[in-house]
Length: 457
Image 1 (cartoon, helix red, strand yellow):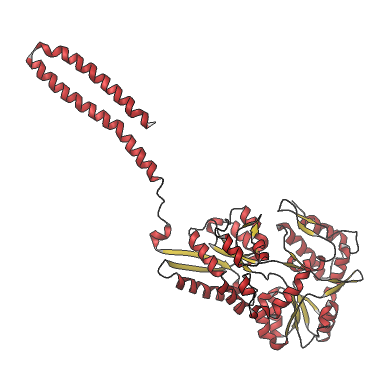
Image 2 (image 1 turned 120 degrees about the horizontal axis):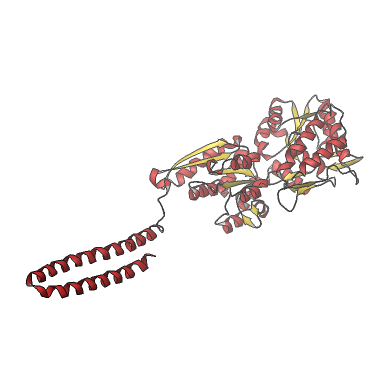
């Protein structure tokens, strides 16, 4: 618009000036005084012309300046304050380890920025819900289970990883797959051990004893001790259904589930699994315990076997010493058969909030937390299996009883891919089985309700 104003205004002004000068030229012949007046009027007119030209030209200057200013990036917030404030979410039991990692990060980047890194405990299993509740106020860097990556990416909480080729090359292919959506990497692999298996005290069980859950329960009851498993968590309850031919998983929409756990057909029906669970719950050697309660029982001597993961390896080793044992999950009796208990498998990942005020520093911290060196440190401190190829192949990791048990169980595991409606219906059903179905409600009706809830849209 402004480029047209300048020439048009110039033409109009010059035309008016010529008319005015022509008029004055005719009048100047009347007298010498009039000639002097004409010269004065001409001088004043030229001032007007200059003023009008200046007014026409100034918008061009301002427009050019304004356009140029759009190409200049505003200063970053950290440049104004001199401090990079980062909030990190992680498992409560990881705090000491993460603080050690934060210290080495700040030492490595000393002089490049002043850091204020704040740890806040947040369950990895429910990280997605906490973060999506308020992305802009959420953590800059966070640990989470791999089954949440698709939802976080779809909601805009995660951006694709910029240097994905390097990350892919450094980590196990299964961990990279778990951190990806549609072939695009969205998070940094942290561990490749997010599964569960059997811990047992060798002073009570032989290698043959631990092959059958019924035998384990029998010996625990004879010793006045307990075998623990968390039936409030659908994650663990999957183990009873996973190798029966009854299925659960994601539909093609990536959000809703299908579920046949209530099936009345096939070699093993849903009711058969429910009856088997009731039989297990009725054993005096069984106890439905959360993971925290299981570990407390290990430490006080009341629990001599249980289902858990590598995150408890160090604490169990400290409690049982040389008697600490780990193995794949046992079989259990169902519909007149011995059925191998299944498991969900997966990885723990580190994500960078797409709304972080310091995306570059947040990404650097995520890379630091998941580096080969710090994955080795995580294994030493917490016994967690690395996703990094070099760290995973180290002699220390390969000789770990917990890692060996996880690898043995991997033959019977399934990558965890279920939608959000899976968890509560399964937990409700399993807790009623753990309590012995006190109301006597129809098992088929309960399974129908479970399947309906899991598959709800």
